[in-house]
Length: 266
Image 1 (spheres, rainbow, N blue to C red):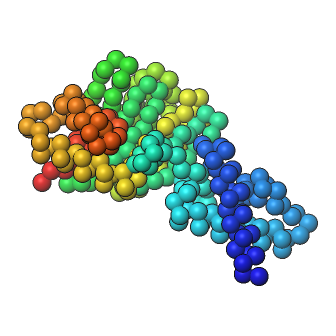
Image 2 (image 1 turned 180 degrees about the vertical axis):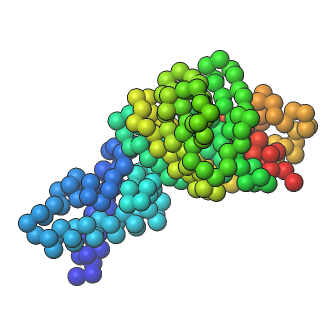
């Protein structure tokens, strides 16, 4: 009986994973999965309750194994990565997909429209520095405002005095009220306002952050102070790591980690 139950559990977990892999940007609740897997028993409450219990247990197991992520209370999503090494995790919100996402990070990137916003935690102040990069015109700038724990609305509309925590980020394909960003320590919640072009989020896995930090520390030791923020110097360094050691670092994220180390230098 125990072996049969284990087989049944594994088959259920495999079926759930296939659904997450088929629609990588969609989030599922337990109720969604009951319907998708055709386990509904509206005429038999006991069977319905059992199906919900089994799916809930499978989801929790898959989350512990790292195959899926709980992105909102009782809402789960498959994990997507930018690289084979699984250093950078990626999520897409809005459009026709899920609109909410939750994760923990000290460095992360929001891609909205043609802009990339890098958020870097200044641990001495307990606040966040935001760097904006527009690769289409080669323009980079840093917001003068540091972000503390709070809830912010981000969009392209010009801020009014009464708007309070509204961050104006002007750019192509950015809606007037594009997303809501909630910061609590290193716990981040993002809600896209169901925008046409959506919001893309990239953040490190624990393994990825450790790997990038190790490389960035080596770069800083080998590079003179006046050249440490030079993107050309950084690019040559990571190209050397790729050609000599087959270590593949994403250039803009590597630069963000270098900035984080310099920002938090004691």
